[in-house]
Length: 303
Length: 226
Image (cartoon, rainbow over all chains, first blue to last red; front, side, top):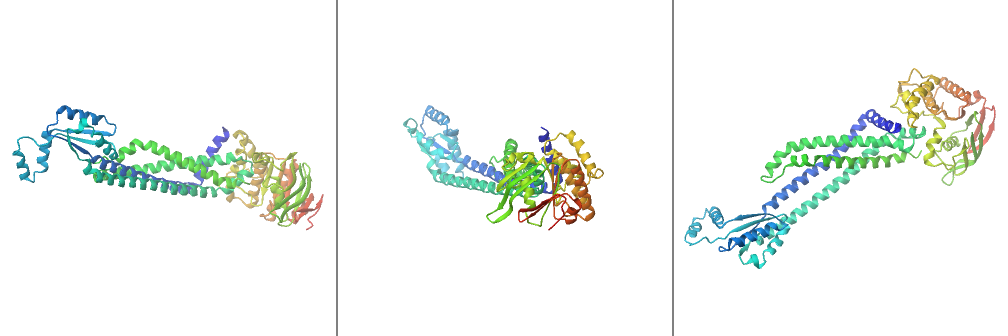
């Protein structure tokens, strides 16, 4: 226990007596973490934006004008109960014709022609939103069941199909690119941290030699560096989180305005996941730091 | 106390550090190991503190055969042998007191004992009034005295001094040699590695001369002959 407290004390002394080296190492760690965090923000925004676009996609199921109410109700129930379906909105025949008139208000001839008809030519409509755009073909296929099919005049998914497929393809590529960037920045971060720690240890090489000379065990020599690594990691993550919080606080309103209507609430995301993100970063950084320092110290322990 | 039998150290296939060295140093002896640069003096010191392993032969210290010592046992060996070097090897960012206490701290010695031992040693080497100074605030001789105090913290039976006066002027050299003699009088075996002719001639103790990795002379009360 005495040795443990001494290792902690040595770590604090090393930190303060080499304050410039400590600050430089922490700055490098902050830069590495900051780049990873910026990428995280970009991913969150990209995800939210792509989700917002996906939310805009829906499929309208048009019923024939004389479709019985119970058939429409059972179709709606069936769709609502599908695990792939997120929401089903019902539009009556009356609402359908009102909307038709509103949409075509600029074409009075078309609107007038409706009044010449004896009855409402439009049927009721179900607007279906899937959880995932890839699920629309399944939903449409499931409506081909004769139980529903005989009352359905049209399901307009084919109109959206090409656009939806293109969008899916773009989103998949954006996500793959984002993942690639995360991996790349992660690797760059690992190299930066590894080298920063190696440089820090290099400055201690004589002290390590002296510790060996006076009979310190290898574990005792390593322990203060491990503790220092933990200190560096905690401080670096603390500083980075502070910077990121300020940046997010500053940018969140502009981002929300930019993605009008989409639910891109960066601040809420970080408030909700901040502790988890910080915890993961502290553990990852400390592990990386400890491994780097152990490898770097090993070289100077052979005396 | 120290016994080397048939010890050789080769670096690569043709560079000979030591060549079949046989040596016996008794407890309480003061021995000077002399020789020109590159003759194997420092190699011998490195073998004694297990910084290097012999290619052939056996090295025994206090009855402990350290020829194939395990890594985990090296700290235990080094707590039994005090070593001082020409370049002092003090930690620049630690005070005099901290440099000496450090050797005890890294060995897990209780703080109470450290507080009792370190002032005694600093008094022995005459630095009891400079405990808060940093190495850069001391003269070379004073720095070497700190290194000697540090080497003595574990009360070693053996003190190895590798060119301890190499960086010192004649006055400081005299002070350090006097200190080593005093330590030897307390019963510690001292091995002084040097090529300072005046120091060796003044000591009039056992002198071992090494050349080309071999012991060419081993005489009591001898003088520097190279």
